[in-house]
Length: 189
Figure 1 (cartoon, rainbow, N blue to C red):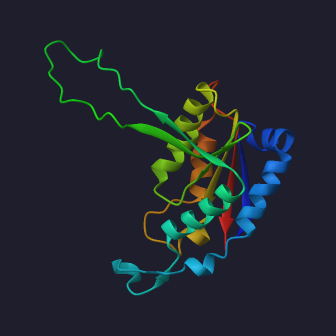
Figure 2 (cartoon, rainbow, N blue to C red):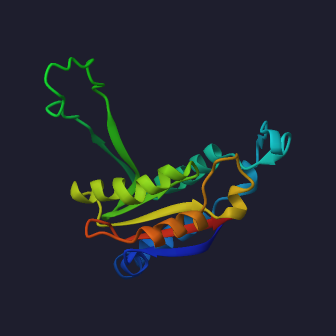
């Protein structure tokens, strides 16, 4: 695979290039090491692409994850203890799930990385919420979001979001004083 797009959200490109050049080189090598065609294993059952061979997002994610773990990147998991004090008076809730957590795909030296081959809402959540939460918890200070470009997304299941759409929305959203610097990397085969 290869990196074909870079978008700097809230100074993310500059922060990554300045603070983490060696880790960025490591990430670039990880991406280059993935032979996406080994993961073109999904046969579409979708009406508009029935029978077409597609890249399997789960298999691509698993291949990338293995390479990150081999380079000693670690997932970081935070247990969630949900507050109940905001319920209205006399509300009797069911017991809350005790095993809830939030997880960042990979962290090394305060650089957080998320790999997203899913729905658009997950990309936005990663950058606009999760990375801020993990920064506030002291795990990261900068982030990288790795997403497919449209050409690759078109070769996956319907509903996979893509770099160009994500960048448009971030450009029009603007930044806030709580946003983490994030470098968004668009990848293709």
